[in-house]
Structures are given as structure tokens and as C-alpha cells.
View 1 (cartoon, rainbow over the protein chains, first blue to last red):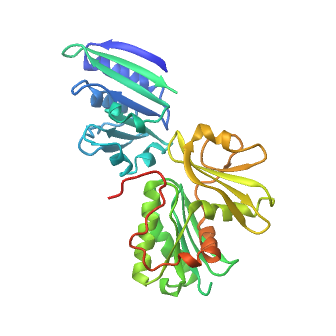
View 2 (cartoon, each protein chain N blue to C red):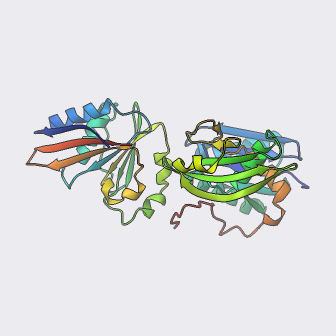
View 3 (cartoon, chains in turn blue, brown):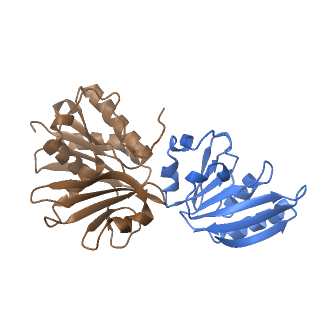
Length: 142
Length: 212
């Protein structure tokens, strides 16, 4: 476990800056988990991250479970929120997505099913401190 | 084997289709690319039939790899094989991916040597099995199981060989079996597995997936 950075941000703009900072460290094959309450800005963070790779059509995958975006990287964007158990993930070929070494995978609400998260991953934890004030912690697990 | 066998392998990155004409002759098409299987498989079957000037109804059976391997890949291969078999009233032969890979690598190895397969389940786990090269053919030493990638080192000794698609020192890379070996396995050992009753034939996932 290795803390990459901890930033307190006061606006969406500053969140974008943090996402940009993380995007510099990421290479194809990486997995990024996003942890935070409803409205914390998990999807917004992903949106801001993807912008750096020429992807502008990021939407919340809460309904679809997984979205795929094609830019400089291929990006898989999961959301566990609506799932009842992790077996539902295996049912849609979850590991085929994660085994794709050409893609970066985002997982929102990853803390719901820790058993399917690869041991090596980045964790983005977003704590709500105020209306638009957030604490963003990025931790690397090996 | 009286008539040619069509074989389909989609368990790994390699999307492979072959027609085994006799024990030594085959025509095989391989597409080594991720995520093309659903798009290319039927076209490849069509091409290989055209090349051999055969119709599906001229075949003895369709052999298909049932894994272990990619969840989506296996579903694509098995549904295609079932559809083709049903339409042409052919039987299916379900072939274990690792057994077919053993046929593929066997001839390069000295008799007596132990060889292993480690195929990626996810970044932490692998499908693992051990085989032994015999004077003729090979023998499976340990059943296929899911183990941690970290445990692979404990399972093999220095004089053994390892094949697969995971990061491991000295591993010989293999991204799925080339389909002629599925057909060869089927023609040699598949006699008892020939079935017209394939409605409930499922991929051999090993890991417990819930299939609906």
C-alpha cells in the first residue's frame, strides 16, 4: 500500500486537476477503483480522467453495469452499485474485461465486492467535506 | 476417422478454426487478436470449408474446445459449434483445452519430462494442470484447478516446463490452442465423447460462474 497523493479540492475544476495528475501514472492494463458516497463525484472523476485521453462521452454506468469508451486507451467503466452479488459480474465476463491488457478499467463502488478486485490496483477515495469540497486520496495497492 | 473433422478453438486470444482431413493433413485458420472471435469465427469456418471444397454435411463431427479459458470466448465457440452441428445434423465432440494444448506441445518434449499449463483466470489466479510426456502421447498428472499465480512456483520444479499466458520466468507463451490439435485430440481420444445430445453441453469454466 502506497499513498500517491491526498488532495483537498474545492471545485470541480480542482477535481479535474487531481484526475489529470493520476492519469499521468496510468498505463494500459491498470485497474482504478473509485470509492465514495452518492454524489461524491466518482463518475465526474472518471470523466475528467478520460478527457485526458480524448474521451468525452463518459456517462454513469449505474444502469448498464459497464460502459466501454475508445480513445488513446480503451477504457472499461464499471459500476457495482446495482449488483446484488459478485457472481453477477462473472456472468457478464468480468474477468475478460480485466484481462484485457490494452485497456484501463475503472470500477465505481468497488468496496461492495472486494473479492473480485485484483490485488494490484489504484484506489481513488473521495470523501465529502462540504458542498463542493472533497478530499481525494489516491492509494496504490500491490 | 472416416471423414474430416471441423474444429473450433476460442478459449484464448487465438481464434482458431481447422479442418482435419486425415491424421496428417489439415487446413487451419488462426486469428490472433483480442475481441474478434464473435465477428470472425463464422467467416473463418466458411473460408476453411470453401478452401477444402467441403460442405458441413461432408464432415464426421465438429470438435470444440470447452475450456478452461476466456468466459466470453468459450461461449462464442460453443454456441457457434452447437448451431453448426444442429443445422448440419452433426455430432459434437467436446475437447478439454489443456488436453488439446498437450497434443500441441507434446511432440517437442522428451519422454519422461513433466510439463505444466498456467492460463490466466485474472491477474491473481491461474488455471493450472500438470502433464507428463510418455513414450507415446502423454498423461495428465494433476487435474485442472484454479490456484494463485504466486503458488505456481511451489507446484513446479526446475526440470519441468511451463506453457501459458501469464508472467512467469521461463514460460513458453501460448495464447490458446491451434484448432488442428483439438481435431487431432478428438480423432485420437474423442470416440466416447461423440454426442448428438449437446443441448446441455456447457463450457468447462472450473471457476464457479452463475450461468443463466
